[in-house]
Structure formats: structure tokens, C-alpha cells
Length: 276
Ligand code: NDP
View (cartoon, rainbow, N blue to C red):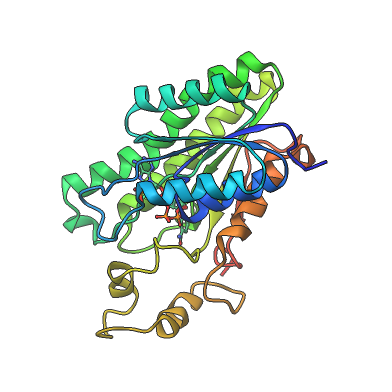
């Protein structure tokens, strides 16, 4: 028996990175997957975003594990598209138990230099998009009558300030407030709500020239190794970054019955960075 055998998980941002990793880890442990991703570029994002081919790769990878997957291209900013995606997934897969509000973007700049558009996209995707994810899923979780587990992806930037990320920090702190309010509201239905707080994760979100410029403004074309040294200074454990699977293991734990009485917590997977 897998740790989430027979359950269905709805995951946003599932085309690549942590979202794909969550889909695979949960599928390995017996869950079927509803995968959503925008598969398109957001105007203010300065690194290449995922594609339809990326989402199709997630589909292939989940199917290779003999689990079912319903994949829909939808933007978390569009509540009706998101609702339609979850409704379709539940109609095909029969139930909903686990929700991963993972989709997100990154952007950088001093607070007084951020544009309205940069601020708007960040809050719309990284905070309102997470609320939309919960809103689209909650009726299905309640109707199922089996409780459930909602896991919202925040960041270490949801627990502490980081310079040049004011909009990201504000959105990720907002996710914590949303998580706590949802945890109280949904407790009577045995629906648990928690957040995870990764330190730097080895995904495309950090490995791009825009992020490299932020961490190494003094180097013209920094190598991965040089960037790793800069990222390492954030962590207490002497590592550059964690892998997506490290976050997926935390998500799996929170999704599983092993965490059946854990709700309303902020779980760092941060190599000690918030303790420094
Ligand atoms: P990726 O960029 O690899 O993955 C993010 C995914 O979210 C992409 O597939 C992206 O799709 C999707 N997405 C973005 N905007 C939307 C949208 N409007 N609607 C639907 N899907 C969307 O990065 P990660 O996997 O690393 O990031 C996952 C989460 O982890 C994010 O919330 C991020 O903020 C958080 N996080 C990341 C850290 C890191 O160091 N990588 C550290 C701490 C937290 P597309 O590319 O097509 O837009």
C-alpha cells in the first residue's frame, strides 16, 4: 500500500520543477493526479517559463507509474478556468483528497523600483492564485466527506524578509495568513491546511540569467559552481540548494495520514536558513 493510495491530488504549476516532482512523488505512493499549469510566459517574468511539452512530460511520467492523470492548461489567475479544470479532474478521477497550491513566479527589484505590473502579477499569481486554487477545490473536498489535505507552497521568504524581493516576500507571507485562516475554517470538515517553506530549490526558477544577476552582480557570466557558492551562504547546512524531491517528501508527509492531526503549521524545508 502506498502512503496516499487511492487518493486524488490536484497540483498547480505541475508542468515542471517542484509541481512535477510532487505529481511523481504522490503518484509513486498511489495517488492519481489533476495537473494544472499555465504553460505560457507571464509578461513580467524574466526567465523562460514552462511549455505545453513540459506538461505533457509530466503526463508521461505519471502514466509510467501506472497512475491516472488529467492535465489542463489553466492560469491560476483565472478562477473559472481553474474551477473547470478541477471539476473535469474530479469527474474523471472520481474524488479529491489532496491539493498542492504550488504555482508561482519569481521576480526581483528594490521595492521602490518595482512597477505596478510587476507587483500586480506577483500578488495575482503567488497569493490570489493560491486562494483561487483552494476556492476551486474546497467544494469537492467537502462533498467527498473524507477530510483532506491542502498544502500551500510559500517560501523561506514567507517567514522572513529578503531584500529585493518585496512583492515576493509580501505574497509568500500572505500565503501563511491564508493557510492559517483556511486551517481554522476547514478543521470541522477534517480538512487540514499547512504551508511548506523551501529554501532555494534546484529548479529553472533559480537557474536563469536574471537570478544569477541578482546573486552575482559582480560576475559577468557566473558558472553554476560560482552561483552555488552564493546560494550556500543562505543556508546553515553547507549545501547550495535542495532538490525538488526534498520538498515533495514534505508534501507527501503532510498529504498522508501520518500527518492526520497536523494542521495550521508552517513547515520549513530550508537547510536551517530561517534559523541563521
Ligand atoms: P518553476 O518555475 O520550475 O515552476 C513553477 C511552475 O508554476 C511553472 O511550471 C509555472 O508554469 C507555473 N505557473 C506560474 N505561473 C502560473 C500561473 N499563473 N498559472 C498556472 N501555473 C503557473 O519553479 P519551482 O518549481 O521552483 O517553484 C514552485 C513553487 O515553489 C513556487 O511557488 C515558488 O515560488 C516556490 N519556491 C521556489 C523556490 C526556488 O528556489 N525554486 C524557493 C522557495 C519557494 P509556467 O512556467 O508555464 O508559467
